[in-house]
Image (cartoon, chains in turn brown, cyan):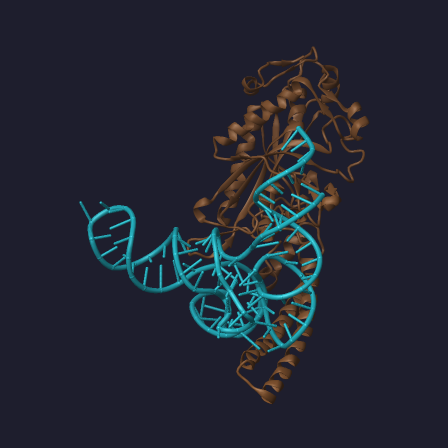
Length: 418
RNA sequence: GGAGAGGUGGCCGAGCGGCCGAAGGCGCUCGCCUGCUAAGCGAGUAGGGGGCGAUGAGUCUCCUCGAGGGUUCAAAUCCCUCCCUCUCCGCCA
């Protein structure tokens, strides 16, 4: 959620940010609505103050004098209720619109609306050529008996997979390796709940805008998270952190569930885009002036991991119009997938500034003892499913076996999947 | 699933329908004092919104005692609904 003060002082900032996202919102009308709801609230409060003032004298009065003051206070109470109701209604109308507005875009997020408008800011250089025809992860994985999507379809439907054998073990190696690497940078490992309340999804900005991507469990009024960002962020909801606790850095591991609504026909082959996958996610709570640096810091962590795994990659700065609601700026790392012959997203890191913190009411005491909103920053450490298939495709041999990346061998206990 | 207890400020804990956003304690902050430490003394210490004012200082005001309704001139206090936590029993990875 945005700071309402934007409407009163920096309306043009808000307007231009919305424009960069390709949204047409009548900002002036919102400002008018905001002004009138405050006006009504002030009127209601005056009535209430008068009523309370009058009410205080009642216990000291007797007889007819008491009766008349009670009557008078009663009238004020009625007027107050009416006025308050009107103010509440305007508040609701205003809030309903306000919560749907996405975060301000960072000036350094590129112009543009689409994935293609992202700007490459870095790459690992030319992609090394294989001296044989590359196969894709599904062909390789099926042949090796470590990926089974057909039986997964029987059990669960499309966009699911069984991961088996050494590939399953490789997941554990990958996760533990990533956790150790992040531990070097003082990220605290966390296994969060993956079923959360509505408030956690609202607070992180996934509700209401992305609600159609979220699985729900109606019987218990809970939702399956699409990323551990949700429980990690909501973990500190309604808290006032002390300044010396910051930055707080977590490395959360969880299964992620995504409905992938509206992606029919897209990435239907194999387990590249599935309804369920595991992920190690970095999440930081920082002071406001630190979030930009923290965003770069998380990108560095991602680059360390991706380059240690030896994937060719490129880093893109995502276009303003392609950002999620809560992000002001986002970097994606795209790894090279030889089987697809192109770069695909393997990590993503976003600076959500105070957007989530405001919704979740996560604050800290600054040096003057004032409560201020923290900034939150998130980033993928390892999206396990995609990383596994990036390994399969990049480490495949002419014989159809898959070598285990050097850094994972001590964790895996084997060197090759065959 | 069954039975019971309880939700008040960072924590503990009191609270006759008005003098209660709330005693007391702990903790914390600042100051004084003690050669260190501990103790002692004094002061301060919930959050959110709105008005006036310059998006300052200040000042006025409203809301919040798990949440939402209700009764009343007036609710932490009375009534209703819901949520959550804890304990015991049962079942269970």
